[in-house]
Amino acid sequence: MFVPIHSRKVRRLDNGAESALKNGYIQEVSERLDKQTNGRQNTVYKQSLATIRQKSIRRGIWFTALNGIERGIMNIVIKCVETVRSGTVLQTISAIVAKISNAMNFLTKIEVLGKPMAEKLSSAFEKWGNQTARNWKHDRAYIRHLGLDLFHSHQIWSLQA
Image 1 (cartoon, rainbow, N blue to C red):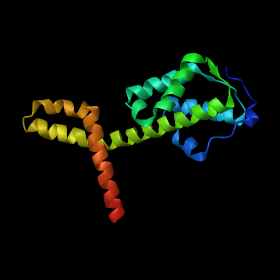
Image 2 (image 1 turned 90 degrees about the vertical axis):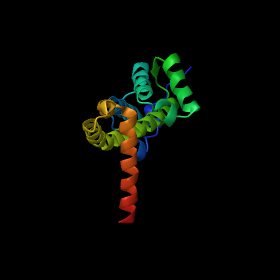
Image 3 (image 1 turned 180 degrees about the vertical axis):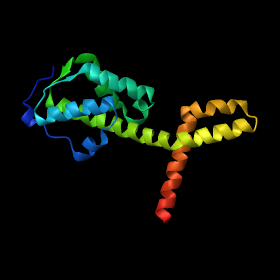
Image 4 (image 1 turned 60 degrees about the horizontal axis):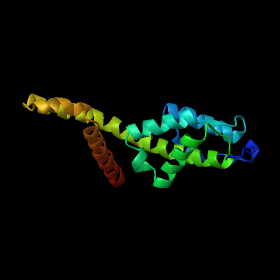
């Protein structure tokens, strides 16, 4: 059983976690968590956490970005609690949401880098007669691969300059 505590006892999220949460619905939930730590609101609903979990599973982040304990905490809170009111649990959940958001932001950047390259390569190989190349521009794994390659090559060039 979670015992609610006064919001003034809840510590504020660190700046790194606050700046990391900028991803649509996750942004909205993180703002709600921030309000909770500021004492303006006292609960997080299980549906919000379930939506975050569902989106992170779909993007392939759930098992790669979170360890077993963090996944277990999120799952247990989603299954057993309608509203989270405990300050300690709120802090833990907000750190996990920040970690998910960081991973989603990174994947979004990688996909933004890789999408134009995938389209160019797809059209070039399609002109050369490869009919399966038409699907490359929609293949998420291929887009992420190209984006990650461009990301690392940009880092190497920017370090040498």
